[in-house]
Length: 418
Length: 182
Image (cartoon, rainbow over all chains, first blue to last red; front, side, top):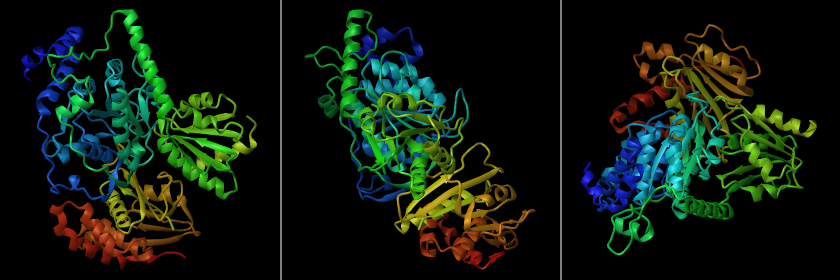
């Protein structure tokens, strides 16, 4: 790493001054910059026509694991870099990227960092240069990344973080869970910030959400997370990958992201990416700007899916793998004559509040199915303003409820008094 | 018609790859497919199982509590999954190492002598293909041609020289399966 290169750049110089007391953090960010300015090279390697199957332009239907779909979709999207550290049940993301060797085709960097903390700070560094960069981990590793995520939100930097959840707390289990809902949508790191959160429920959505998450993240200059679990990560399903796009050239980045720290021309002040602002007046202004952005995200970006809701009297609300189980439960209950539907939030932040509120007056009871002890239920109750009785059902620590088990709970909705 | 299948046995018996080949074959026939493995720290020598769903319509839950077909390759799996076969469903098991044969009389039970055959004929690595052949004989969920193309897709190219051996094993497996009860 040629450090001299950085100290010639006043933007980075300032950034260094701000963080000189945090050496590890500083080192990783520099590494991100270094990778951005040196490894990512200005030259975008032209795509060979159909030399490798990953670059084939045909809309081939593939059979892939959810984790593999994320990796391949990132290459197809034209992502510039991936920084990660292995952990079950998401290690196939980095494994697939290493196998595909995108640095020989699109020029995408794939790097195993020395730790999760280093990886997220490399994402910070890459993002500060306007690069499309990502990291992935599972619950315990995501906890380690929270500081970096908060810093990215404070520095208004885009980037993709994938959390393939496993049961906690602590190291917990490697089996699927949804117990990081609160961590993801209610903060996780410190400060008044929000993380755009997508919850795929199929392998196809794992691929689609890579594209959506990067797009939203750059649109709002805010980090975005794909929140999934071992069910969707390990399952194989049919998937059509997004078309291959070339990585953006530095000139394209300068045009699309004038904030990117890609070298300071003489005619503008330096682009500084820091979450530090010791003047409280200015810090409040920054926060007000973030809040205005969050209100805009909440107004424009909610997404959800309805399943057999047309004449429903009862509703299951579930996301991700729990929504897949719920879909079967709805079919089973409908076969027994029960009028029930499923609402699946696709964006967990922004939460589809208006969509859920529209059920007030139509739905008698809601069952919130989650692979946790009751987290999203709070947002569901807030969304319907407690005007629909809402109960929770969930299994903990990596146990996945069976459709029959949930059906029993659903049938009790009709008889039990709330 | 949706086929909900569980394949269960010891880690190393080729349970997951058998499921993968089935899923690939379904994909080749343009069907909807899902493949969901039990994953965990217990795989080597422990039990391994995979759920495979093949059908015409969008697949809902990859987590199931009952199955149309159960392919059982060891005693712990038999105890765990025999009760989960739907009434009128099918259970295929390899008798090798089974101390307690299946007891239900409301399902179709078949035995396949795959482990002994594989050992006797020196094709122990094609054990899972013998079992797959047995399954296709009883329940032609997908065509043999699709299975062979699926096999080709799921095997790395350097192993393609084993394709004929696997094909033979599938055909051999078809002759090994016998009905135990109605």
